[in-house]
Image (cartoon, rainbow, N blue to C red):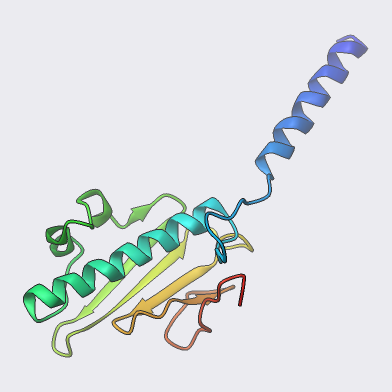
Amino acid sequence: MNRAVSVGISLFLVAVIASAQAVYQPKFKGDPARSDSEAAALGYMRTFLRAQRLYKRKNSHYATTLMELTKTGSFTRRMASPDRGDYTVKFRAHKEKDTFEVVMAPKQQDTTHRSFFSDEQGKIRVKEQGEANEDSPPLKADSE
């Protein structure tokens, strides 16, 4: 391989690596996400929590399955799938107490793929390493 081709390939590889490590652009003022994957996970979680509130208002109890939430209008059938790209939804309903827990667990955890938790209280909690739970610190907007 001649030197010009080798240099061209090297520059191409540097450009590909640089674009893969692009800095996250916040989606709104105070966006707490660190990556597009986190933004999608948090968006899912907010939609899920809104759907649970609407469902309870209409049915006097929280939904016990993700599929039940599709009756609210804001939560689609596709959202009932626990596979959310880089994240997996873990939903646990406690029918006897009319409570629930939802976790957005990253398939590979790192600084731009944290774990998120919420329950019927609606506060989103975050954990850097391991699965987030009710004892994890609250997620704060960047402006806080």
